[in-house]
Image (cartoon, rainbow, N blue to C red):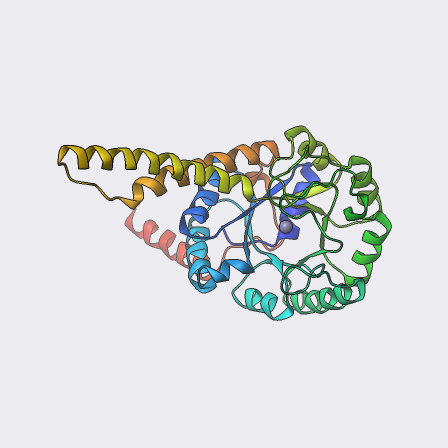
Length: 330
Ligand SMILES: [Zn+2]
């Protein structure tokens, strides 16, 4: 299955009234987990990479791994840059073949200090122009979403204003909009609070698909209600990290116990990294599958018809050749 753009996935989700999960990959195991979950659930998905991943691995290495997995996949997916913070960074990811990008113009490149409305509009417009020139859609954001550990209950000013949202989309030309309706990046400190009235109002005024960032910890019924109110892309990252790390911690504990036993009895310690990574990856798969079912995207892969969902010409030629050979051999 070739990569498709996020707008194609989200348009199909709009037509079918479901949400598309956007899951973050940082290494081979998390990439494999996302693909495996999607394959098992037959769920279209967005695999996203943040630019901060670059501090951990060379982007080309990770992207090569993702593309190898995509080549084998039979489920439609988009490769998305999550929270691009500068024009240069976004261009770097476009050059690597990403089929969707986010420019988060709400914050400066350091990801901390806020950008003004004018600065945000300026950088977002510039990215939209460049990305659209090669047919790649852009997700934009204005106003700050919750930060890790933040409790937004009552923090009205942090939420997206419907009229400003409409103005932002119109001025910048973004294809997808991240909205602040109460979710926060990372885990909720207090009780999650989703402003459904606001979301409905934004959806009525904005004619592009909406994104819920910080999907972890939001009750299932709030997520599903949000989907009926216009949320089409749901970012889910912390939840899969929890699954992974809890499995790692559990396995490390039992390994330590075995080492202690070996030391006490004069036995030999065993060192197998896969013993930790395998259950961690498996638990990530389950966490992602669970979300795909909640987002109601499970089983939707086969009904997906994307405009650019054509087979790669080289692959199509190869398949035709194989068919010819098969005919001769018959
Ligand atoms: Zn985010």
